[in-house]
Length: 410
Image (cartoon, rainbow, N blue to C red):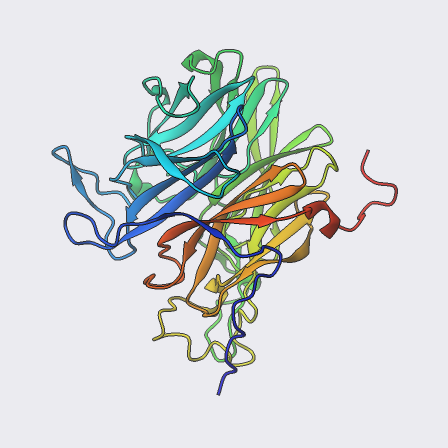
């Protein structure tokens, strides 16, 4: 028999705080899940957490305002914002915006939110002068089918760079197999003229030799190029160069693109596929200004090919998908170059394999690393369909990182 998973234990974080729990059902009786979690420190020092309530994986369409927003992951329940004034101990909702999702950020003391309308439509931005309680009307920056869940962005010389996914034909039927970058001059971010968009890059395909299968499972023919798609793109800056790093949905594999912004042209070019443990699930990459190290999180499956047989009985106990989709261990990782990652340790380990700690939003707060996590525990349907947002704190996180470059980064 497969061994029993070890019991839950605090790991790096000493337990967690519930930020919010999703209602069990919507007004039509459909189960709801949590999605699109963000975590931002406000100018006052308060914490702002963003999240959405969504229909679970069995149902994605939803009629609203006389329109059937029939798009995968279309959020019909608004983007919601919760605030904590006691360093994350307690939370209360302060606003709900009629947006599909949003990425809050602070620049020069003002709070902005870059997001999408319902149905993953359009790129919009709005601003708040009271730390998220009220907002300006959303300004449309780009029209069409654009999307990215909250992930790493960078600001260089007053310009914000963010990766965006888009169907190749700018409609849902095109499939999410193209990606681009948008750049906004933050001197006047509410002016659409301040924003530019790169060329799209279509996912190049995955060589069959990079697809791993458990023993006894059919493998693709050698030398074939398999379809795939981009997801959840981060933008990072290192030594003056900008790169986009995106999930490919292939086990432990990310896609890397170069970003150039010169002579008035914003350009994106595919570089390579690169091995990253846990890179098949969302990463949220940030950089520690004190050390120069990149930090993120990874859901690292303990036996993705089921070589031990531990996962053989997973189906039927709430776990869905193949063994590599295991998300019951959330790991803190750090890196010099945002490609080669070292494990600092497990932030949290679930007591059951169908539990999920995933899609975390990290935030450096003094000497601590906070993670707002899309969490599925208790009565969650499976490891994917999270039913709450939890806040995890790793105290004195820098002590966990080795000096990877002798003498430190310069």
